[in-house]
Image 1 (cartoon, rainbow, N blue to C red):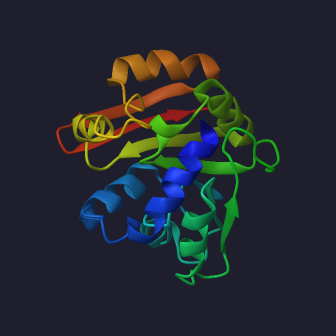
Image 2 (tube, rainbow, N blue to C red):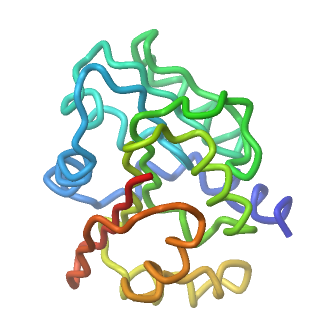
Length: 196
């Protein structure tokens, strides 16, 4: 199944940016909610073509170390064509098992991809492993939970990749070592954050 989804997202990669209708203020809101600063090592997990990276750099500082990870080779290829500065490093990698050291990141942002994680328990264990103590994990969907769930229902491969309501996500995620910070579930914006 994972390989089928990789192929699915590889096919979507070339048109990904053209289909991005998210207004800039929503990306800025995600970066703001992640409480970024120049001292942080930041992971953009499931980064796609890097649509969030300009706003991460804007919020954290243009020289902040940003690590962008996606399991779609084509998404990463398209990200690299954007010629981000050298402090933005990109990797084709599955978030369930990364090559990063323990407690490596101050901030991890999972934008518009959490429902697609094949094995959420494995992914959450790995995110916990690589996040520093008192670091922040932010999971966001800037088009809103209901919109994402409706959209995913139109594709058989991802129809079960849905975002739960905040209380259910909190109940599911906290046992993996995370502590709930806040949740925003508005009609056109979703965000939930945790600390370690």
